[in-house]
Figure 1 (cartoon, rainbow over the protein chains, first blue to last red):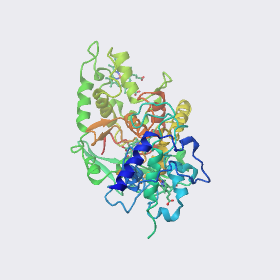
Figure 2 (tube, chains in turn orange, blue):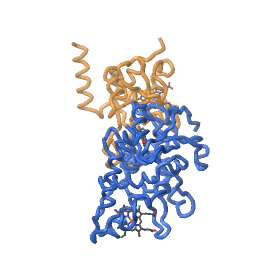
Figure 3 (tube, each protein chain N blue to C red):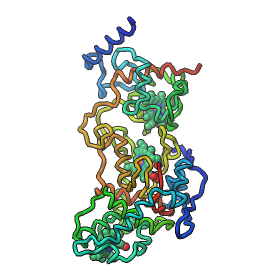
Figure 4 (cartoon, rainbow over the protein chains, first blue to last red):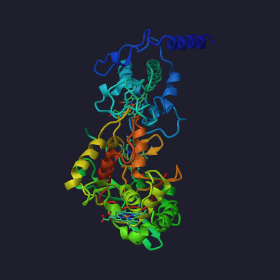
Length: 158
Length: 271
């Protein structure tokens, strides 16, 4: 109950003052693909992270990745490697970098950049097919990146 | 970039039962020379669909697309022109257009314009019959595409890419490899780099258009190649091009040429 309340307050705060301690997409510091600093300063929520990873209009990670720990997800894709054990292969900073913009880690990757707002060719308004002016809202918010990261950090090799 | 070539089309062959006897369809063949280094073998999208969907195309009796062919034939014979002309009154039977589907899009010798099947039909409607355009997404247009495409069923796709077609082909190729939209994805990412893989529930094919127009079970409707392109570009969170835009005409020419050697399927069935 108190934990839920604390979370609710944190979410409300994050929503009320998004710019307070958030790193904007253009200010993210990549160090060889890794991003050491939290994008929000607010710890990620792994449950919210799963929601983002399995929702088509959000992260939709399961379109391309299998996660064995999520057996209820129907038809996971096999474009990228399974995310099982990812937290044993990469540090937290590396994973934050991959989820923020994987192209700094994997050159020319097919994996979309989730926290980026400009530099697109014929940018559209989400899935409407209509054009939209840059900067676009990033596909995921800073806190959603941290939430996904919190869940992926639970995927260790044990 | 070294692409993982994990291709998994099914092993199967397609012989279609029709009123005129069996029609053999080439669904897999050596890639045309211009794809050297990119693809070794080209596959029809038919080989990436499940058993039930593939079976619907084996017999015209089961193919839901044949209804549109019949409707197209009625329109072909109807005296709809401003002076009572029908397509038949100038062209005779639709079989007079045998072979045309296999070589389009092409640059028209007389006019020098890049022509899709829709462009030819539209020209006759508006310039020779005194009618309003049917537009690119009407049922009249897809019925007529189905009827005319059927006349070339079983013939190898053989689209010209040199001479007057070359600049359009280059333009289409450029578009094919451009990473559009907020997801930054090119046709080539899905249909050349990762065909055979699953993207969620979808089994990625090579995105060939030898089967078009396609009867799509999901929509219970006929789909033209350029309508399919609209959907694929939209899915990259990009601003789409419009059917009959110069970009999509060039892209259709290029994509058609990637299928040179596969059979025209007439009206195919996909889910």
